[in-house]
Every structure is written in structure tokens, then in C-alpha cells.
Length: 69
Image (cartoon, rainbow, N blue to C red; front, side):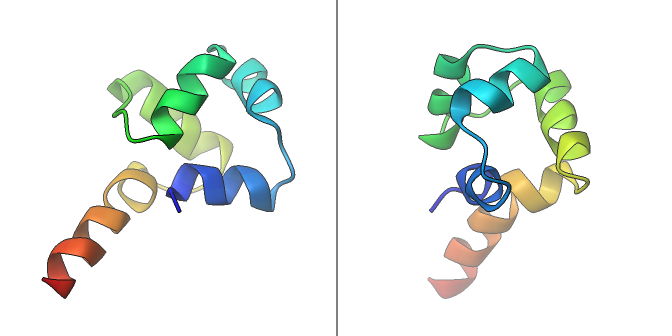
């Protein structure tokens, strides 16, 4: 599962609620959860919102996949 979706579900937020908090559209949140890489400004907003790092959200899954190969 996508790390953003995991965090969103952990905090019991809908895509619409998260989007409103970040100033983006729910469709954009959906796209990110399906693999779209957001712009740096949005990535930072997401990381700050969840009190974590951009790396933790967007790079952790890639490292795990590549280290399993």
C-alpha cells in the first residue's frame, strides 16, 4: 500500500479531508496514492502535515522494493 494512503487511513481522513487541509483537489490526492509523484511544494506540505519527511513518504517504498531485488 502507498505510504500516503497508509498515513491517511491511520489518521482516519478521507481524500477530500486531506486535500482540503493541503489546498489541493481530492483527485490529486488519489493520483498521488496511485503513484504520481507530487511537486516538491506539495510533497513538503504532505510531510509537514503528517509530521514526517518527504523521504519517508515518497522514497521509503522505493528503497524497500529495490533492496528486495
